[in-house]
Length: 333
Ligand SMILES: CCCCCCCCCCCCCCCCCCCC(=O)SCCNC(=O)CCNC(=O)[C@H](O)C(C)(C)COP(=O)(O)OP(=O)(O)OC[C@H]1O[C@@H](n2cnc3c(N)ncnc32)[C@H](O)[C@@H]1OP(=O)(O)O
Ligand SMILES: Nc1ncnc2c1ncn2[C@@H]1O[C@H](COP(=O)(O)OP(=O)(O)OP(=O)(O)O)[C@@H](O)[C@H]1O
Ligand SMILES: O=C(O)CCC(=O)C(=O)O
Ligand SMILES: [Fe+2]
Ligand SMILES: [Mg+2]
Image 1: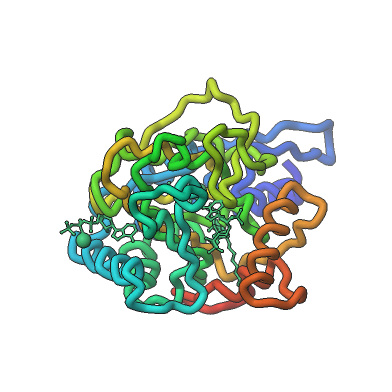
Image 2: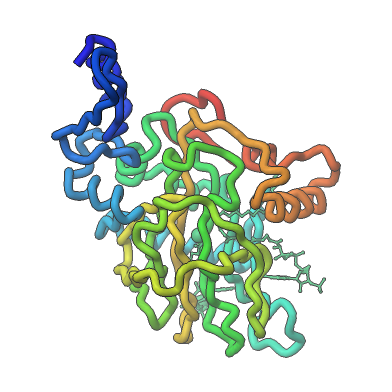
């Protein structure tokens, strides 16, 4: 092999790209096949993940860590959530969502049932979740050392009213994000109680993160769909599914292209989970106009304008305003 080809091999090897084809100057095109294990593009090696865990995330697009968040912390998040439900605190930027079947009904037992809190970055107690050292340790394996908490949620999936509106359609979270690269974004999602098929656990399509971002829109569901619950219309229903049944404190980290959703809550309890989407602060914003993300960008812009007035806020701005640095330096986002 020529010196240049040798160097190219070293550089590309460093960039984790294999196998590759290089032109050998002296003879014809030749195939260079590496003998090292398959290149890892989704994770960094910082001594937290075992090789098995790295390979599993690379292959499946998610990783469950058992018992990562303590009972004490979860109980504190629950107390903070209930104070918000009772209207005892006013948090700037917080969005309180009710299930559409309740919001649109005149005959409801509990007017106050809250299905989701969104954007709790200004609520100190809940936001503590996003900065828990044991969570950030894992997040760093996916994002690298400069970490932004971009989106926060506490999901309180209500008992289904019979209209199946407690379901969350199959989707990719990247649909909502005007920043890239996707591989430097990760969601952490922690069960605040035992979560199983009965109360509507997460359902994932392992390996679907290897695909591209798909078109999303409201599903055609008879009983109605919650605002912004877009789904993928034509995902492969034969793709193997995994139901992530989890115990209180178990945490799943997953890639923003992983196709996932959650089932109907067939119990009488409110199924609770807390989550944060992180991105490397080195990510960059993209303009999503005229892409498949334009539909969600217009919806989010409309909500921001209704809340804050204007006409000057871009979809990217709505993210830059909400994002908070949780580790390292705010280099770009
Ligand atoms: C500067 C920063 C600005 C930031 C703006 C932020 C905008 C929100 C960003 C959301 C981005 C999501 C990113 C997620 C990334 C991860 C992927 C997660 C996927 C999701 O979970 S997306 C689902 C979450 N969706 C939302 O939170 C939607 C945002 N919420 C809302 O728009 C409002 O809360 C809502 C739902 C419209 C309720 O508004 P409100 O005005 O408070 O409620 P009213 O009771 O007055 O009802 C008005 C009107 O809306 C109907 N309604 C109420 N609830 C729902 C519902 N859940 N689904 C559908 N429709 C609903 C209600 O019946 C009324 O209808 P009318 O026909 O009577 O007018
Ligand atoms: N406004 C609300 N909207 C949605 N869920 C709520 C609201 N207030 C409380 N919750 C949640 O609903 C669930 C049931 O609350 P509820 O007050 O009925 O019972 P509890 O607090 O578990 O027990 P207790 O009977 O001692 O009050 C709890 O998990 C609570 O976190
Ligand atoms: O049902 C849930 O808890 C998670 C739903 C979800 O995937 C999301 O909000 O992005
Ligand atoms: Fe999601
Ligand atoms: Mg109570």
